[in-house]
Length: 130
Image (cartoon, rainbow, N blue to C red):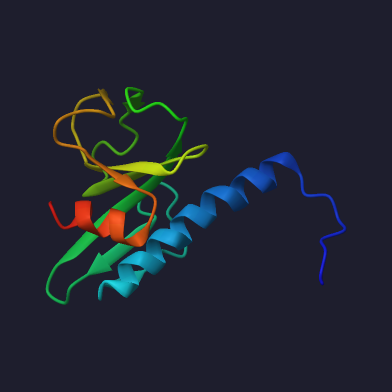
């Protein structure tokens, strides 16, 4: 059985974990029939994932958060044309789908946000409510 024998730096390890949430979301969206596009570089555009149903395109930003559903999140995509932000709790099995908002900060438990269990079925059930 393969074993990784080299040390992974703390910053690299965190990047790998964050990217795994993006790839999980890509898989769930593809299984739902969306066309999924990954920007070569999203620096300055705040688009981790671009999806399309053919005629329409939507920009998605993916973030990880602590395990606190009443946490306040800060708007990092103002004027970036992001449509949806998907938050994944790092130490639990839930997440939140939020339409991009214009306030500087907002609580995760805002009424317009949709909480989901971190599974394809749980995510898609809430994603289809938008």
